[in-house]
Image (cartoon, rainbow, N blue to C red; front, top):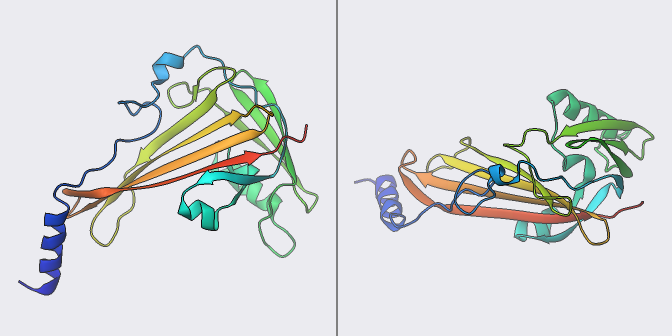
Length: 213
């Protein structure tokens, strides 16, 4: 038996008792939010003007080290790739770098549709329209609650085998009216063509975008 095969065998034996954590997003079953329980629930009203740079309130080591701020134009669900491109184009500085919005003005179009007008330091502005109308995907837990959504993916792999992942995002307002954005991701790692789970890596972060008015 060569060295590489021996290492793989040792890993297989060591991880034979490893498991993946349960998926964590609305509709994934288990203790997760059940969208069918909130079909008639109202959504929180996100209307307001917020600082374009969010500050980290809590997070894992990665967030604490490399993601202590977040752009406001990167917390709402995008409708299309064209919308992403328009936001990127508006946010570019003269040197080609992406800029944080100075602020975003969020308005309510209907019960489950909002839009935000982002204004950038370069003087440009862009409007993003985002919809929570799909009640199986986007869950509103009440006017004083949260808007939550997420899903799973089978893409990705490591040197030992394929990975799957799931993620969830949530928007809410705190007692001061600031916008709170929460993001969590789980990466479920496997080896030997996915036959043996080797554990789950978890990432999370929570940001606050201060209300301007």
